[in-house]
Image 1 (cartoon, rainbow, N blue to C red):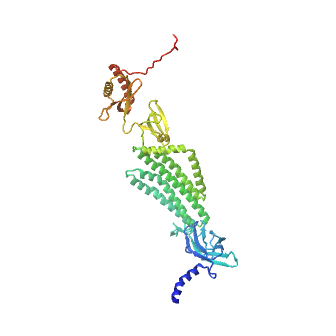
Image 2 (cartoon, rainbow, N blue to C red; image 1 turned 180 degrees about the horizontal axis):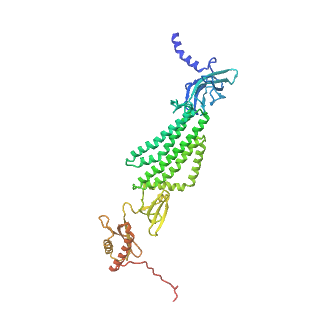
Image 3 (tube, rainbow, N blue to C red; image 1 turned 135 degrees about the vertical axis):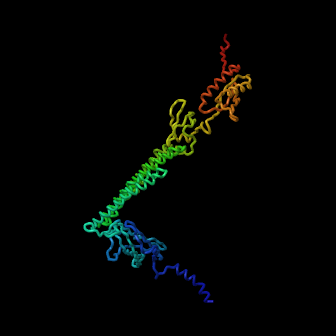
Length: 510
């Protein structure tokens, strides 16, 4: 019985012991989140080590962290190393946890080395400063230098056993640079012509243009790379090497930007313009020039931002400023941007095409001459004048396209006859006039027809509806009116006009 009761209360006692802080145990626990060894592959980078501290006591603690470098295998403390610790001199309340992060940064001029970093953590009870708890951690950092001297080796591989003075560092450097130049010349004068002979046999000219535009930039890049790579032979200071590398990167970005600009301008855009001229759609005819303008601005801007970043200039503020300026400009030219997006919508939806006859919301009937990104240009044939309409108005207002689905349109000729006229005879005459005109379409389902449209004050109004080609609508309408007038005169059908009788009264006086 007693044994069973003891077994039953044992888990309860264990939980109670875990929940109640122990005066003899550690007040602050330290947990390491990553391993104590990290490698910095390239100098100028940084690594981080993280520990989590937890206050397991009932009183707050003051956290203090100190970090210092140790010596390498030879006992020398490596220079150009920066240590940074977060959460130093902070209060840690009961039941609270916090991360302590150590950042180890190496500069661009740091040499290859392996060294320890000692981290000391001190936790002082804030109610009793005499009670202090410490924790010591050691981490190991390995740095790979950006620049290391390869010694007196050609290409950094083969020992230079040539006679003096060719076997010196300067001699090895000159020989290596000349070999790189010979390699670049071999590619430029031998490999490139052979590849060009192969590309000329292909059906497309795209590869020929790419070879033409990249030939010289590739030559320059190879020579530059060989020159900078050969610097590892010379015993120069890391500061000079970093400066030269920075200048090399700037020149390389400039050359690559120039090559990208030439390929975009003379290859991609030229090929796109050639392709767009063979298509029936107007979208590519407008978008290709737009992309051309954007590209010739964007490529130099990206190159400039990259150069500034290489030179150590923070471009974040510059990009933010450009963004703010862009918003201001967008608000200032929002109407123009509206027309721009409306123009793209017209090119995609294609409610009309160049050459179509359309009727604008103003009642003008025009021929579409050009659909641009900002406006649409039309010819008003009646007044013989060009009409430029903003695309926003074209998209948001009613436009009647007379050229779709085909060029045939119904037209009407309204005429009034006097009351008492033979209405059946009037209808027959109107149909006979339409049947006798050669330009009126008389296909099945599209034949002319007559309707009585209204009873006016002094006439019964008829409408003759007929279909005619759009280009002849004005001429046919005039001829039909004249023919109707002549036939009504011949048949004795009166076309009345409004009449009013006015009576004057003299007020009863003779």
